Length: 171
Image 1 (cartoon, helix red, strand yellow):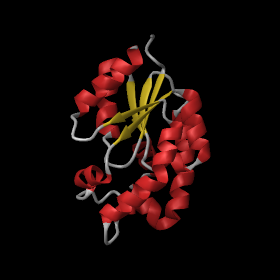
Image 2 (cartoon, helix red, strand yellow):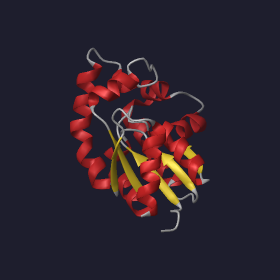
Image 3 (cartoon, one colour):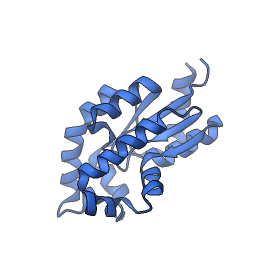
Image 4 (cartoon, one colour):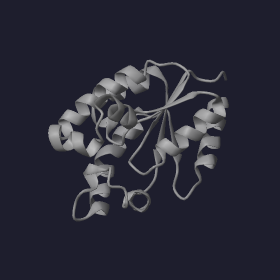
């Protein structure tokens, strides 16, 4: 199989989308993009600031525009934000415009990877692990509906996950 023009990574926060995406892009000689970083670049502020001033809905509107734009760019690996799949338009663009990999891991693994990160406004709560569990129960059906492939990142290195994705692309 020829190298795909566009590879999209979806999954919960802390699944490793950005880290794995960078490995994957480098291995395949593709560009890497991260929708959250692009939102920050376009607005000039961090994501918690967007949430503070515009709420989650304002952020999701910005995210939808960025995903629409970035899913049309060839020769790239795109890592999306954990909540990107909550909008039907995003799911449709991702499914129609490239190969989608759902990077899955448990809420416990997500928590271990994210609890120190202050750049995650949805975790600014009394019980971040419970919040991650709730988000996963809401979003997992959407991740599975959107994905062409499911790859677990649980307890794995970014390189090993990137290699598994490359194997799936090539076969």
